[in-house]
Length: 310
Image (cartoon, rainbow, N blue to C red; front, side, top):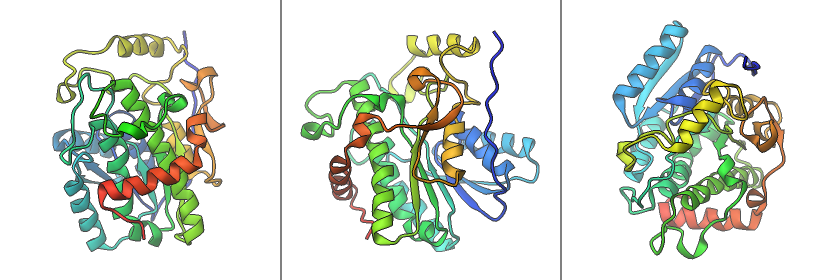
């Protein structure tokens, strides 16, 4: 079955500086490639240097004039986040686009970050929360757009306020849902606080739908030795143009969110179920409409990370 083609036209980004987390693989590499192709200087903070170098080489092969550079970053270690923040602040160059895209999904057993947080909450949310705080002066200088990636998993579920760190019980998917709800609530709260405090930052959220990326594939580093049944099904559907997206279409919502004129929109694929289809605006899911919960999460995140946006 031929797949319908979807596209997003990007503006000229010459002179703009973008930082994309998770740019060494999958959706993140496509985002970085498209931004570089539009003229942006792209910073690719990566944990795996070899993968990062391969991704950067692929971008330069496609766009010989691309300006891309690697930086070291492990979002699961606040010391690594702080080190990257210090290096970039020392340079002093404004950042105009920040796409908080990296993530880890459903380790079969509970794992901890270097700072003792449950791996998904600590990486997907707290790591990006701390990174954004570390970069705040540069984001303000660039009057930046910050786009945070949530997930279709955030259509349901809730923040587990009584056991945020999943110390008492652990369910991989419930913990993943929490982390992605947190990403969405953070992006929305950042927009509110920037407007109230005059930071000059615009912030919105997007989600990629469902695509055959490495999130559910074999990941020995998170305790998953083999591909999950879920990713096998997703690959089958994607190859046939059914229900879900591809690695090429899934990044389009984030690209639209990062460059669209209207910052206050939630972008995602438009087919029923939001798993695939062309990108566009959609209503906030119920877990993301909890503005008091977003404010509470912000305060808790400041305490857990030791980072303040003041």
